[in-house]
Image (cartoon, rainbow, N blue to C red; front, side):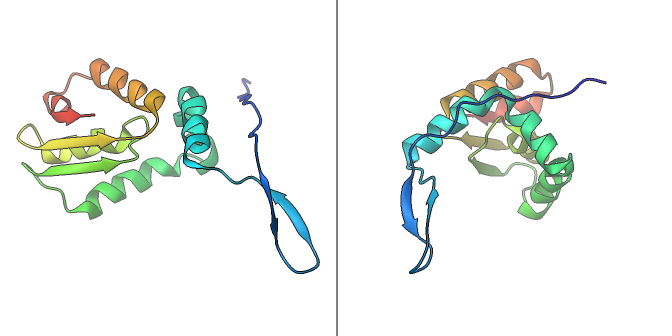
Length: 131
């Protein structure tokens, strides 16, 4: 049986924050640049991590999100923090070839993976996704 192994460099930085008057613990405090670096670093394994951490349930959650969005044929929709593009692809199917999906993410690596996935897909509606 194959096993999954993910090796990521440790998160650096951190600052002491008081938890109570008598105790202080060390918690990582991430600024935007550190958070962006983290998502750039995990981009190659992001989808596998989602599957692992949610036990595959994230796929159902994403379909429910698109259903609840109220998007319909011809709409223009925005996918903020699109990651590798899962929601953007589902939204694209919902709005169809006359609609438009704008996908944004502050992780350059995530956007590159989403763009690569878009090039690999053949449905006409996927051409309406702009990053």
